[in-house]
Length: 110
Image (cartoon, rainbow, N blue to C red; front, top):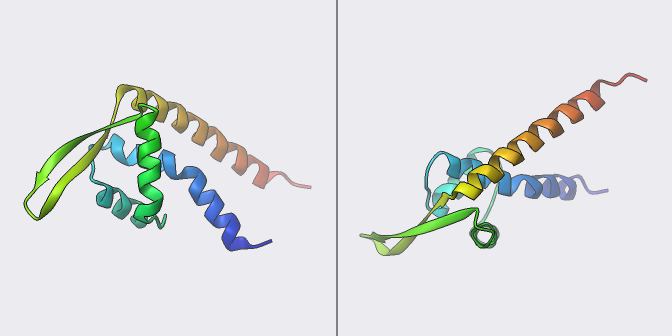
C-alpha cells in the first residue's frame, strides 16, 4: 500500500467539511479559502477547490456574491446558506462521533 495515497484520500474526505467550516466564519474569496486550507496543511489547488464550491453551491449549501475588484475582474465571495449551516452542524456531529470512535479503537488493548 502507498501511504501517500491513503493520506491524500483521507484529506480529500474532509475537504467539504473544512470548506464549510471556513465559510462559517464569514464569506471568503476562493484564494482565501485555499490559504486557510494550506494553513491547516490541506494542500489544495484551484482545480480541486472550484468543482467542490460548485457542487456545494448546486446543493444549495453555499451562495455567492460578486464584488468589483480594483486589480482585475470581479470576484465571487462565497458564504453559507441556512441549509449550509444546518448541514455543517450535522457534519460536525458526525466528525466528533468519528474522532471519538477512532480514539476508542486506538485504546483497545489486546
